[in-house]
Length: 285
Ligand code: AMP
Ligand code: FE
Ligand code: FE
Ligand code: ZN
Image 1: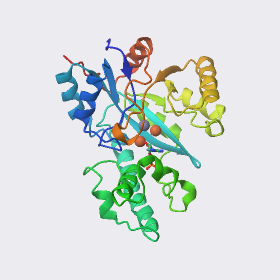
Image 2: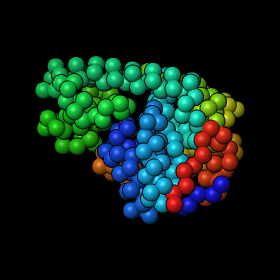
Image 3: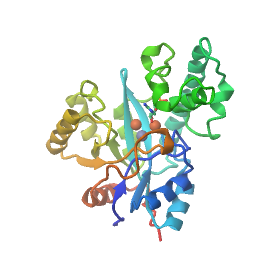
Image 4: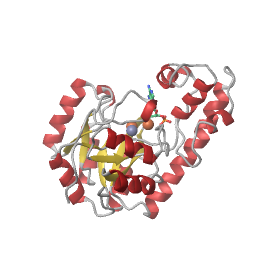
């Protein structure tokens, strides 16, 4: 199956930490002249239905997906999963566990922050769509609403930084388990922004294990990958026959990332769709 270009394979809606509804996001993609959009909210597929309907109405092709939180030791690893079965019991159970612990963890962070700043849990809930995957960006929005910081960037550089003393990690499975879950549900896994900093890249022997479990690709073209890191990722992609993707990681007004600032080639997209058995792209009319 073929979908239209250009294709942006990593975006967020209010179902996680984006600032637009899934339908608004699809409309923004149409306005930005994208042919194909992947919706990849953190740890949730709740936006798929609304985004699919909007894709059909807006003449945009949609690849339903998710950005699964995983962790290797202290290192957070984001795994993009595309076109898997959203009703797969193992994926449902694991994402439910992650979302639930994210909420507990956010509340614990707010309790710590409240020792030093005027802030309540209700402030965070007021910034969150019911049922959404809660993250630090929602705490950031609450801090903005209270006037403690001017934008999410400032919140992350100060109060929400892990060194600030309020940080708390949340539950996440190992990347290997994440790849297994996505593949078992008929989906296609791609490591998101794998070279945010060179030091924090996955060890090569661990990457090889992910390849053996069915890893499809690396998100090489992403604004947060360092230049040296992206070069190294291209070498690794060639060595292990991994696909190279590019995406914006658009979060609406929550980040500077613009729709379509990086895109994925039609060849890679065709291979990705051919590999999936859990779900099909939605073709906009
Ligand atoms: P969490 O997963 O709750 O620890 O929060 C991480 C999320 O915060 C990521 O998904 C990013 O989208 C977002 N984020 C990280 N750094 C920034 C930043 N400087 N400005 C805005 N959003 C950020
Ligand atoms: Fe995010
Ligand atoms: Fe991410
Ligand atoms: Zn993302």
